[in-house]
Image 1 (tube, rainbow, N blue to C red):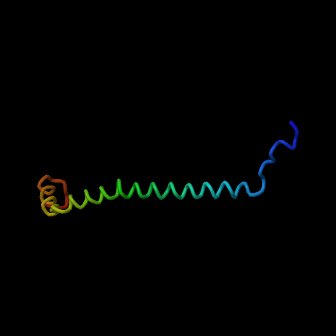
Image 2 (image 1 turned 180 degrees about the horizontal axis):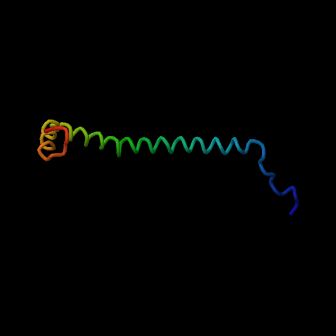
Image 3 (image 1 turned 90 degrees about the horizontal axis):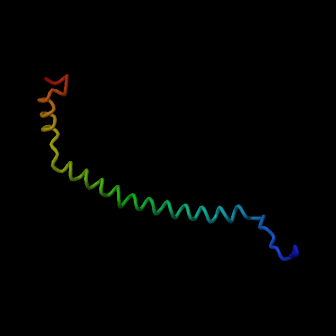
Length: 75
């Protein structure tokens, strides 16, 4: 093999080329993960909290805890 048959390595602009590829890829992956989290986790969590507090009576809970003797300051 002669030295002219081998390709020269790309030295100039190699870092910029790799960074451009990886930054675009990382941005796309992060958008995908954010969308997945929003629709799979956050939306269902928000619905669960809304369902819980729809019929929640804080005074009833307080009275039950008071009867159980949880609070030292409330008689």
